[in-house]
Length: 456
Length: 137
Image (cartoon, rainbow over all chains, first blue to last red; front, side):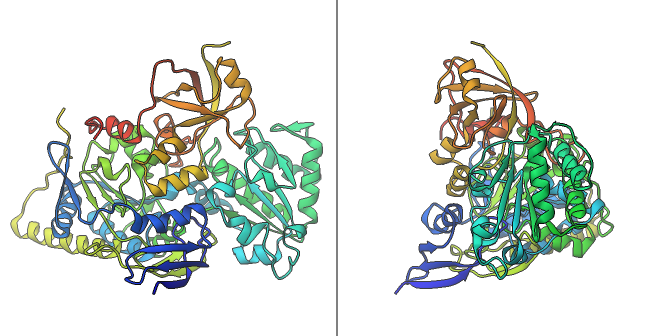
């Protein structure tokens, strides 16, 4: 008899939908049906048991092919790479649980590594702005129950967070928003007329890269100053109209995305968005929230801030004396300066999502991928270590985009023998300690290992 | 009709890319979802092309062949979009303005017809870049 598992959390985006119903076959080995998930979340669950899975670590051979090895051998190899490297980089963590992140941090500290997460190429700019200017935010529940004006700025949830609008911002009927969409005004600001813009009451097509000027214009209007006839491609009348709606709101939330963080200005775009939110609070209640991408990319920020005081770009080369300085200790910058001599890609795909120039630099040195799936990073690695899929095969704590922690459960067991990120990093840590003890006993010198290359 | 035009490139997520990515980056779905470029109709016409023809897109740091498609989400003339992923990252400049974040959106590219060329697979592009590509496997 197939079993239905209810209230399952989705391991896709930062919305962390926790209302999925997953039907599992009677032998508990196959996922038959997933209810309530978006198209992407659905695919994650079905892919877990529907496709080819890697069940053993794979080590690159001199002819460029992979050979299966045991987890013990993989742990030994990974620990030796870390032990021998002068400045390894451990990066990723968008798709794992907080337990795995804490265990990886223990390894990074022991190895004197740089520890970084996907925020480095995503919402890192948000952290920089928040450090400088604060974060007048709220929970998604507060937005659902109270907000009558929603702004999506440089964010396209219809594609990147498919259920965000239906669960929290536009459509749901909340405690003080009983008429759902009818009780809300939706404003979308984006250079593209996106699918999110299709459901907007007002759409402003800002010129790409000119968001700062438009924020500045809104701030000027809110403070009662004159503005030019057109700013960033938007007519003055439209700016005045939207500013008036913002000031009259009972409760508003600005959700912003990569349109701000990936464009010229980066953290300055977010900084002025926060300033506008603060200005609006002179009149009514306004909040702002980063549309965090992966389901637990808020997690490493929470876990590592608690452990070391910094959310990302942590330089642990002085072990427990951490420092953080994006631009200097950020993954892509480190790669481009050839400043690291080993790379761990964990629960992400730097092979597909880093600029290819950064990939080329990193691949000059040993590259180890820890990920359940075959991806671009796994296919250029020296060593690929498969792990269980968090939220499907491994339980654990994840942080939603509004910093609310949620306990995820598992619905099936991982393939036989496949371990979790947490167990893997605990084992690497133990082996690292052994290597240090052996070296101390023998007085051996370090030698940096070289990555395996395919024969030309 | 121009042989080559200069556009402002942005790269972000599309739901097609998201679904295909979870299915697998070596699948035909990922290839079709990501090896494309969306432009305004005026810019496609300026190159003397129609949708579904191939173009070569070149930035300050790289070059890639992708297919022009008419997207559901419209752009203004002069702006172009490639979904985030392997093909986009062949041309994304790694400069970060000292924030750690590459210039994923808002960088100049030239676009020209790619007569007689082909789109490379994700594996060919990434493995090829690091000396691991061994031909179709």
